[in-house]
Amino acid sequence: MNRILVLYDSKSGNTAKMAQLVAEGARRITDTEVRLRSVDEATPADVIWCDGLAVGSPTNMGVLSWKMKRFWDETMGEHWMKLDGKIACAFSSAGGWGGGMELACQSILTVLMNFGFLVFGVTDYATKLYTLHYGAVTAREPRTEDGQAVCRVLGQRLAEWTAVFIHGRQSEHPANKMASRGVPGQE
Image 1 (cartoon, rainbow, N blue to C red):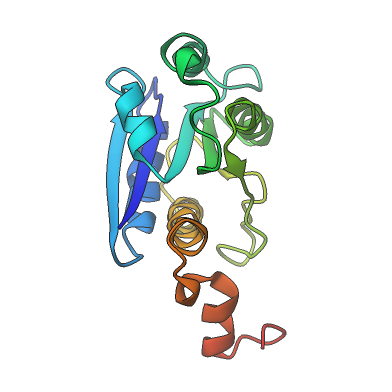
Image 2: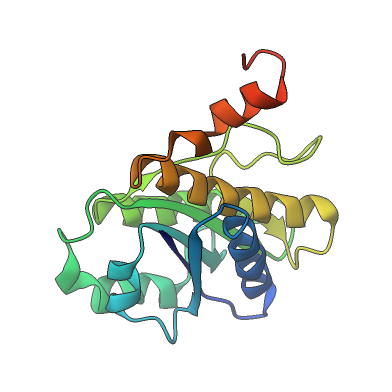
């Protein structure tokens, strides 16, 4: 059974809405259990429980929020070196495009790498113009189909990678799925 934790901080509710969509995407993969936790309610046991972790934060001057940073510094600090090999990704919302969401994702990924998480980006497009190389990003609330799609794709890819690399379910590998659908260049 895949165990996915979607951990988020949200001041305005926008990142919380993204978190719900990331969780929805993860649930697309069979045999996946998802926990959705705000940084205010999450415990070290939640992080230890999961195989895969999606961390979301509002963009705060181009980096993760102070509450999310405090969670990793203070709450998870004593668990450093106990999380190696888990798989993780990031997502962030800002007040507008160009607000530093990708930088915030990179700052989240940097924290996660320091805890031994294996982090990833997504190379394929979620929609015609939307990618999530560093994580899922939106300007404000994910209202558009494109904004919602990037969140769902991120969660789905996290669940796929944990299924493949933690549980050995090669049938969930994204390349295998593309080849079976006959996606050009992926045979």
